Length: 492
Image 1: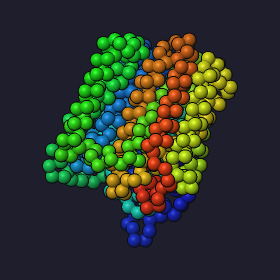
Image 2: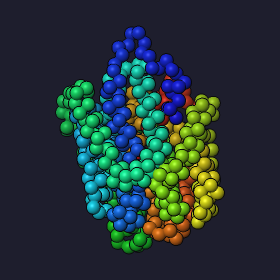
Image 3: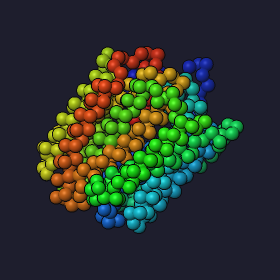
Image 4: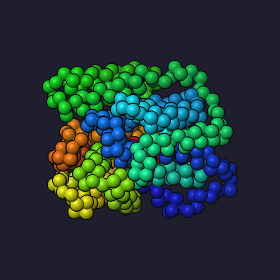
């Protein structure tokens, strides 16, 4: 998506004569921290079968290893952004990196599923602090063409996360074991913290900043989402009528209603009420949540299928995802060129049709043992369908957003992205059922992808009904490509 910005505009790398050029040291530190966060979900996806054998994970543990991370990072992302804006950007960034690094060490040393899931949740909370603070530091340190270059590279890291993560995770797991995918974060995190102490300005907090943080709203949102995923997961093992299913679902309904009321009454809500009235942003963010859930859920199930049913090693499983990532990148590049002529909605609708064809192909091929015949064709169609949807949804969401609100709007869309990932993994796991045996995986894989085609159809109808048509205007946030950055399907 934004990967092509610097190639198309080589002059972006040179500041204009009247712009002071700043060293790239600060940017290198911010991007190193963001790389840890971006790679984490896809790295862990590939390592999951090895982790499962090492810690004797159940199907629910598999799902929570992913969901705990994306729920905490998504649910706390808007609060993390407010902390960075109101308190201290450097302090928020260092706290986020410190928490993420310590939680990575705890994940690497985990002796059972409970410790691993708790550590993954802490990693997610660290990511929610780290990411908005890092982007905020980049926006304040750099200006003009340097800032454009920095944002282009930032977006590239987001969109290439899925390919790099599955390869890196496969190679590390095969060579050094699954604990290495967490240990690798320690030297990076420590180096980033030491470098940031020396090079990033301290900054100052705004007066009365602590009182302006909507902490009750953020905590209620996270608790409601955790209860929702817990209830969805319980349907797999206990059915819809069991108390362990309906009690968390009822709690989720109460907590999310309380969150909505707290937001209306808060002096400084996480999302200003006017934001919810921007139809293009709300509808496109809903499509973003749905499409991310489909992709992250599909990668999660396919990683287990490749290693458990086809017998692929972690590194071979990583390589098996490369065609999907390549198709996605090429389709996204083509969509970036075509969107000015076609507008966002036709690209979303067309992408969803191609995606539905891909997941139906995967469902029909469940049980096949040939990667080239049974998996690859579906992967190529899924990538070709998802690429245009990610580009077009980001542009559609930002179409009616004033430039001064583009950061908040982008944060709302990223929140939809993360929450969609958690609900997608939980929902597809619940549909699939048994994930710990080869026979169970074959049966569940086909069923989950058939349901995924239904989700794509629902997103198609939502897009038709709610996403505005028309082409992006050159002067809008969408016309400048804000919103595209950092929304690749890496699972976060």
